[in-house]
Image (tube, rainbow, N blue to C red; front, side, top):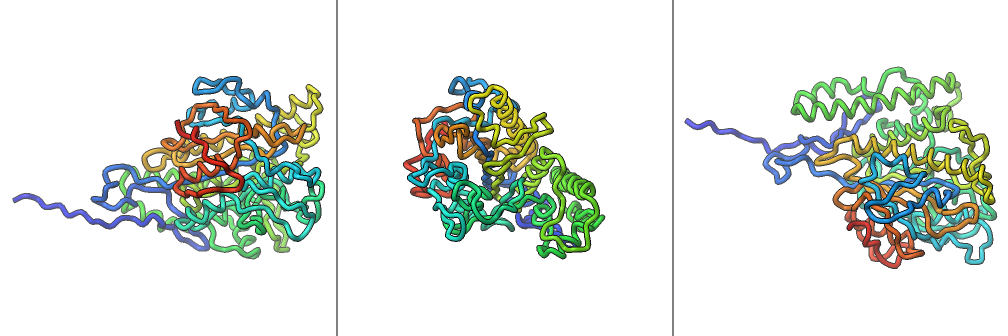
Length: 452
């Protein structure tokens, strides 16, 4: 008598959470989430689409950034050398411009305009107070579509305090124009979060009040401990491959949590007064960057959000970089006036930023996701609203795109027609993610070179 095998068509839902006290941990993409006998059951689970933007301030040293040759055989420039390990998934684009950041009779304020128009291609209204106006940014357009499937539609992060929230921060432009790169609508800028603990609790905690955040920050038990029973129960239903994938993901969550707790301990005991935000920022700026990048990896891996924006520093930032031997403020150095010692220092800062971005890309590349990696299934735009900050230029911007295997033909330096709108590239990226628009900002077409 032949044996009859019954196969259940039930599968683990994609939006599955491990829930504990004040904790909701989304799961990474598991093969168990693919229904049995479906078209995808014989292959790894189908990946989702993700989009990320990383902003650096104060321009770059152009001849240290732009590669000397174009095409697939190009050699990484000094500022791009930290990306050697992911060069095959990298597209460097020269010739892009953001003309809406030009003055148009508004006088000085190139830093504010460069930042405010970077993701929307809209000239911001010059004002020091109420009545700010720019344009809905590409991340928020993507979040409206991709955010339907996630707990957080988007995640907006930064590294520098936004205490200067009122008045002018750049020649008649309100501080909000350099405090964020994300706008939900032309009159609604999205605030950027700088505290790793708050971000961690947004990703894995249910509470949002100051008192709840304080209680969560004071707890000594890992959030993972509160879901241990659920983890054990779930593991009993998974295959060996999924158990390994789940274990690696949860260990990544625990490692980031350890680092945040260590930073909080270094900041001293919490006071009894409830703060608006916990004091949890690492003392070392590079570690702060890496923790925030690692939180974005977890957000993508757990499918908590599919859209992120990240400001590595604000325009006009005067931050020194003692960890690489630079005591001078960044903005002051960027107005180098051709001085060789200042140019060398700005180049070191550019390389430092790129080293942190390389850490992010390598973490994404090391994280399996469906039939590839998180880097394969993400499109990431890195760049600045100024090119040569010494002259406040908005043409030939320092721009690169990473990831998107199958959508992006990487390993190339492409020189586009001079003054190609940056919005053409952003419009093309939306196309690649299945969020098509007819036009966006000051766009004039698509960047066909995105895929060869």
